[in-house]
Each structure stands twice: as structure tokens, then as C-alpha cells.
Image (cartoon, rainbow, N blue to C red; front, side, top):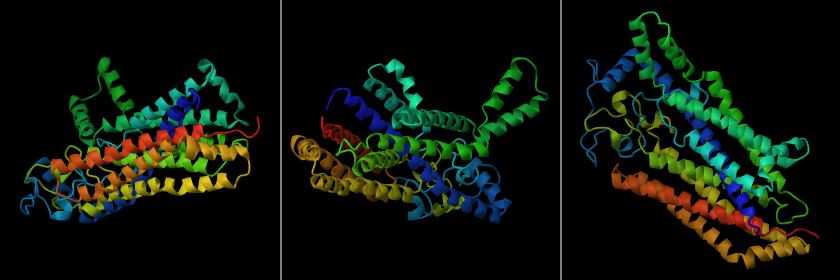
Length: 432
């Protein structure tokens, strides 16, 4: 493999990881929408008294509901039984269920952190796009590559990749504005403006206009912007795949190419988001492990753990188990694709196909075995996470779960780099 091709290894792995992570986040938000809607409907049926009791319990006011005390749990926290108190991720945190999925079309609620912020996904995507410039002989003329959009998959890849990055940047800005505009701070600012009377002129008026401009985007923008970004990411990934479906390259002109690129997006996306969720753990103010002893648990706020948003600060352990199962399936995909690809090359009578198979299993057989071993080790680490998170909320258990999640993700990153190296190293052209 030529030295310039290493930039393509970095480019494809990072950009596909960014697309996969973003799509996984959108799936989580879509799954969260029905739960948030059900929790909101259930809270509405309880009436305003339940809401005042919840608000008083959170603020410590005179209408605060007495904290429920079912005895101490491991680690000193108190709560509502093993299902609500033993797991780390079952509490929705202050404010209960959120309306992000049902009303805002998938935007994260104000003041809450996303498991993997859009800014992180954007940074990974930007690093990959920047690495692609080193494959060009004249990087300063990269903009000219878009002129053949109607006939060139390379031009389409550049256009959709740039569109995906631009839309992702808008989402990152929207996410930051929403995080900086909590309901409590907005209410405090409104009370201060009412107490101050008419808006003054001069610098104060300028600051007021800045606050209005910093307000989060409306529900319409929060609905269509993630969908449009996801569509651009999928189109970007499809264009990347189509570039390599060349009849003159038997090793690439195969089902294994879309399986390899889509598999990289799935594996890195799922494991990256899972690692972010496990490492983040309970957000400040959310989760039984983060709540002082004697403070009200989920039942004190009439919010059963089963009805919480699985992507919220008190993420449900069921969400982690779902991501683990999806990650294991994505890891197992490679063990099915590889033998089918080798069988396809063996059935091809061209010398180029035979040479590609010899490179994959002979010249670079050690790299192939290393890749498969890393995938197996990542599957073992990933499979241990559900057993750990079912235990009591202890700091040692949280550290172990975080180590397993990050270790599995790191192993898959190295494995995908090895796989992409093999992808470019096994290319043999038909003819001259």
C-alpha cells in the first residue's frame, strides 16, 4: 500500500465513525420519543397536585413530599427497591421525563447533556475530512473536484460530506444553545426583566437582543434539522461506497465493500455511543448514585424507572443492554462477511482476484488474524458490561463498566484501521 493511501485509511474510518455515531444517536432519540410521551401523559392524568409535589420535593419548599425511605442500599444511597435503586442509570434526574423526543423531534432537552455531543461527532468528521486532503497531489485545488457532480461519485462524496459537516455544525450550535438555556435560568431572567420594568436603551438593550438570539431553535427546526443531517450522512456513506465498486478491481467490486464501510459505521458508532453513555454515568442531579442519602427517589416523584427517557441523564440500563446486543451483532458481522468474500474471490477466474485473495490470507495474513482477534476481544469486553451495570451503584463498578466500554471501543478502532489497511493493500487491477 502506498504511503498516500494511509490518508484514505484515516479519512474513511473517521468519517464513517462520525456517520455511524450520529445515526445511533438519532435511533436512541426516536426510541425515547414514545416513552417521553407516555410519561408526559401519565403526569397529566395525575393532575397539578402531583406536579406541585414533585416541584416542592426538588426545591425543598413547604409543599415538598416527604422522602421515601426504604432502608439503606449498598453505597449509602436510599431509594425504592432494587430495580429503582440498584442500577445506576434508571433515574431520570430532576424534572422527570423530558419532551425532547415527542415535541422537539429529537433535540436534547434544555440543560441536559447528550451522551456523545454533536460537537464531538463534528470534530471526528472534521479530522477525517482534513486527512483526505493529504491524498490529493494539490490539496489547494480540492474545491475543483465538485464540478463533476452529475457524473462523478467522488464529486458527490465531497458535496454530501460538506453538507453533512455543515448541518452537523448547526446541530452542535443548537445543542450548545439548548444546554445553556435551562428552564430555571430562563425563568429567572424573565422575572428579572419584569422586575426591572421597560427594557432600557443602550448596552442593556443590546444584551437583551443577544439573549433573544441565543434562544434555542423552535420545534420545527429541531424536527427537520436532525432528519436532514441523517439523510446527508447516509448519502455521504453511499457515495463513499460507490467510488470503490470498480469492475477493474475484483476485490472491491463486491458486496464486501458496502459491508465493510457500513460495518465500520455500525461498529464504531454503536460502541462509541455506548462508551459515552457508560462513562458519563448519572449526570449531576440524576441517578441514585449521585443523589444524597434520604433524598426522594423516582417513586417519590411518581416517575417509575420503566417510563424514563433511555437517553436522558439517568439513562436506563435497558438502553445499555440494547446497545451491547447491537454492538455484538455488528462485531459478529465481520466473521460472516470474510469467508463469503474469500469464497467469491476463489470463484472468480481472473488472476487479479486470485492475487487479492493471496495478499489477504498470505502476505497480510498476520494483520487479518490481528483484526479478528481484536474483534473477538472487543466482543468479550462488551459482553461483560450488562453484568456489571446490574450490580449495586458502587464507584468501583462504574469504573469497571467504563473501562470495559472504553476498552471495547479502543480495540474496535484498532481493528477497523487494520481492516481498512487490508482493504487498500489487497487491491489488484485487472489487466495493466
